[in-house]
Each structure stands twice: as C-alpha cells, then as structure tokens.
Amino acid sequence: MAATDFKDYYAVLGVSKTADSGEVKKAYRRLARKYHPDMNPGDRAAEAKFKEVSEAYEVLSDADKRQQYDRYGQYWQQAGRAGAAGSPGSPGSPGGAAGGFDFSQYSDFDEFIETLLGNMGGGTRSRSTSSTNSWSSSRSASGSAGSGFGGFEDFAGYGRAGAGGTSSGAAGAANGRSLDRDATLTLSFAEAFHGAQKRLNIGSEIVSVRIPPGAKSGSRVRVKGKGNRDGYGRRGDLYLNVELQAHSFFQFEGDKFLCEVPISPDEAVLGTQIDVPTPDGLVKVNVPAGIRSGQSLRLRGKGWPSPKTKQRGDQLVKIMVVTPTSISDAERQLYEQLSACRSVDPRADFARISL
Image 1 (spheres, helix red, strand yellow):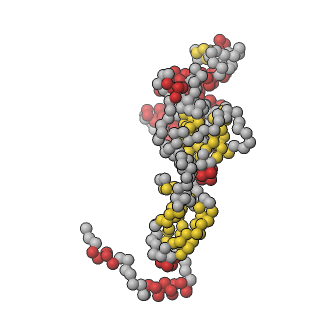
Image 2 (cartoon, helix red, strand yellow):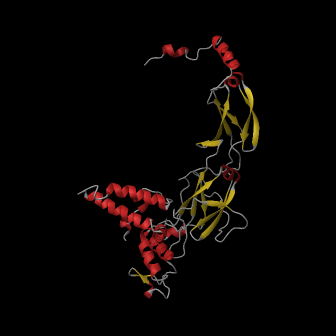
C-alpha cells in the first residue's frame, strides 16, 4: 500500500486509539446504518463511505490485525505477510521475501520499517508496543535503572514547548533530516516540584530519565541518544513534553504559580489573618481590611522552583470573597442593620454612565 493510500481507521470510525472492542462495534453499527446502500439508494458517496467503514471495522475488530495495524501503520499488511512466511531472513521464509521484497538483509520487520522510513525522510516514526503509539504512560522508577538506561539527562534546551528547538544532531545531518522524536510525559505536581526519576517503555526499550525540580506543562526534557534509528546505526534524541496533572488547590496561570483562598465578607471588610497552604506547608498570611475579591497577595520565595537558577519563585494568593448562601436568623438581623446604616453606595456613579 502506498503511503498516500493509508487510511486512519480510527478516524474513519470516529473512535480513539484506546477504544475497546465494544466502542469499535458501537461506532461501526451507527455508521453502517447511516451509510448503508439500502438507506441511501443511488448515492455513490454513501456507498463508498459504507465500504470504508466496513474495511475499518474488519481490521479494528480483529485483535491480530489491529495489533499489526497499530504497530506498523500503512505497512501492517506487509508485516502480516512477512510474519506468515516466517521471520524476515529466517530459514522458514522463502528467500527471505514478502510482498516481492527481500527481507533477508534485516533482522526483523521493525528494522525494515525504520530503514524504509529513514530513506523516505520520515525519521520521526518510532516503535511502540501500545495500541496508542505513544509514551505518555510512565511510572516512577524503583531500584536500579532498567535496560536501555542512557544516563541522567538535565534540562538541555529547557523551555516552553517549541522553545529551544530540536537538535537534528549528527544522526540527521547526513541527509538533512532529523531522527529526533517526541513523547508526552505526565507528572503530578509533587513530582514536578521535587523532581523525579521516571522509567518509560518505548517499544522494547526501557528508558530511564531524571526530571529536575521545576518542570511545568509545556517544558521539554531532552534524553540524548534515545530517538529514532536509521539504517546506519545512527540515532537521534528523545524529547519529552511535560504535562502536569490537575491539582485540587494549586494551579498555574501562564507562568504564575497561585492558589485561590476564600474569605467571608466580614473578613474582607475588617481584615483578618489566615493560614494558607504552600508547597512547604501552612503559612500565616495577613489579609488587609477592604480587600476586593480577585485581588492577589504575594508570598515571596514560596512558589515554584526554577530549573535553571534553582531558586524558588513567588506564590500568589488570589482572594475570593464568598457570599454565604445560608445564614442564621441572628446573622440576617445583623446584615439588615448593616444595610440600613451603610454609608457607601457602590453604584453611585451609574447615573453618569451613558454611551
């Protein structure tokens, strides 16, 4: 199958790459009913769409075919023929050939794919044993590093996504293409704040990497020499794009590390002292009298660490004045008294407003 003939069967059925067999079947039934020729007599476009949907379901509903499709993409059928004839280059394959191509020079079909993609200039493809063809699933390392550990890597080229660029390196310099590849690494706030050692399964390889303190969503971590291979033994770098899991209290607004703290109307009017959580624990914060909802207080040196300077930034405390929805009779009486003697009209200037 030519590269231009490749069909994304997941997109055809409108399901994700992690969809289970039930979701695949449900999507197929819905689309088959919609585009069935009996429902669209004389409609050639609907008939073509029905055939495409049926083709996608035939592959994704078969566990073996789906595995081949997920692993080899547009070359999944060739991979299946190669596997049926015996491993490429093995005595069981007639002449080491499959689909009219001589596989005897390759140790396995993966090596053939990588070499072929390298010759086509598509060096960004990489292997993965998962059906999603991604490396976003990772786990904290325990004990010593597994096979494929390439040494700890710092934040070389650290910055927001897209900043710092990717290095083509010697692996891509020979023919003007890059063998670098990208993966997504999901971290908790605690892992990103303190730093973590992670192990990632990338195809048949386990890559260990140390994440220094201070990573944020959009940060990029380079792991040297763990990118794509070409047919000449050269290899690019792996770039990990960091994503932070949502936290129940702390958050980022751009590069600002902050939290939202509720106070009552009387605390806003009179001022108060409150305990505010920080990454180091609770600290006491003075809230000045007359503060408005949405104003922020700054806790210097209590914020996110910088991976470059190793210094802590500031934590912003956004004050939110919360109006009670249920009050006691005594509170209602006091609010009514306050309303009666209030000296300030917050809408006094409305009479002067016009277009």
